[in-house]
Amino acid sequence: MTETDLSALKGAVIAFDLDGTLVDTAPDLIGTLNVLLAAEGLPPLPVLEARPFIGYGARRLLERGFEAAGAHLAPERLDVLFERFIEHYNANIAAESRPFPGVIEALDTLKGAGARLVVCTNKRTDLSTNLLDALDMSRRFEAIVGADAAPARKPDPRHLTTAIAAAGGALPRAVMVGDAATDAGAARAAGAGLVLVSFGYTDIPAEELGADVLIHHFDDLAEACARLLRA
Image 1 (cartoon, rainbow, N blue to C red):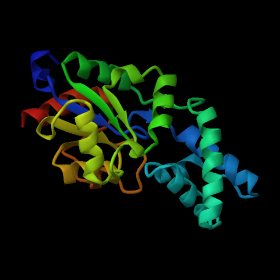
Image 2 (cartoon, rainbow, N blue to C red; image 1 turned 90 degrees about the vertical axis):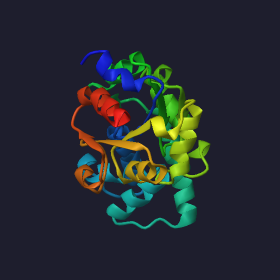
Image 3 (cartoon, rainbow, N blue to C red; image 1 turned 45 degrees about the vertical axis):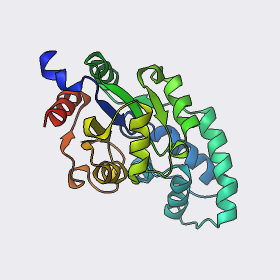
Image 4 (cartoon, helix red, strand yellow; image 1 turned 180 degrees about the vertical axis):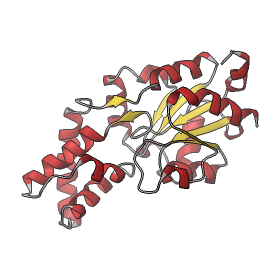
């Protein structure tokens, strides 16, 4: 891949989902869920079973996790457990979470070609920043925009447009990189290019979500983004 091949990236914004796209956070998220399940006398969930529950925020992860374990949470009980979840998760936010293979190299390639990078995640902004700080990744992004920092969460397109604006970009020169229906929905509604990864957290197979490009490794990301921006 030559520098000329990536010239379309200069000045473009590449927006990234976080959980299941940039970072494999399932071990710590589901580990925290299982701590709460155990405290309630419920069986733990295998990571593979609970992975698709990630992506809609911690509250929804709790709801779906407890339902899968055979328990329905009343709203007031959910509020209590949500606070416990956040406290435990934040204290163990990068115990086992790691960037997916090739992520750091891909981010550096994109930045080296002149792209602006931003995180657009349904995770809370403070938790997202804490995680990326712990992994020494925050400095690669112009902004980190959690659901609490936008008018609405993905798949609402306003989340994506808010993130693009925070990075100093505009929609015609933007690509969303994600793993799930929330990312696909936001990109399609906003009119942005869409790259999906095949290895993330989704209850609908990524190949069925209508991506412009589906990648299986981050080695392919820069070329995919450049191709979409040229088109």
